[in-house]
Length: 98
Image (cartoon, rainbow, N blue to C red; front, side, top):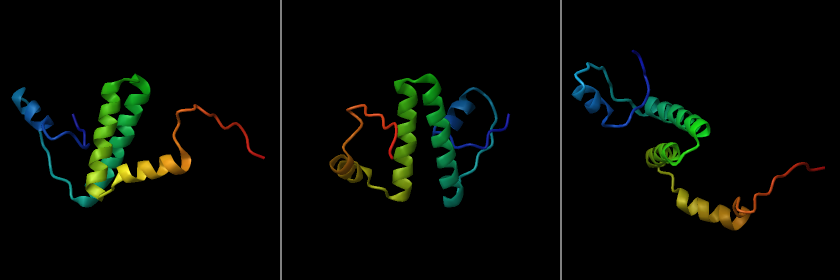
């Protein structure tokens, strides 16, 4: 079975323990960035379908990898956005602007 997708670091080890053969390679920066974006979409889609903490954790793991790869400091940005735009706590739905 062909995959060509980014997997967690221990997945090849787990496959090998099952006695299965596999082929992997290490991505360069360009491929890694593309695969991170694909993985983010995959994990978000799984969360939307399954709607559970496990899938949301996977989304956060990919976001952490993206932040580390790009050197993003999101905590400071999150705090700044809270001050400027607040949060989503009030559940406001914007219906129309004229």
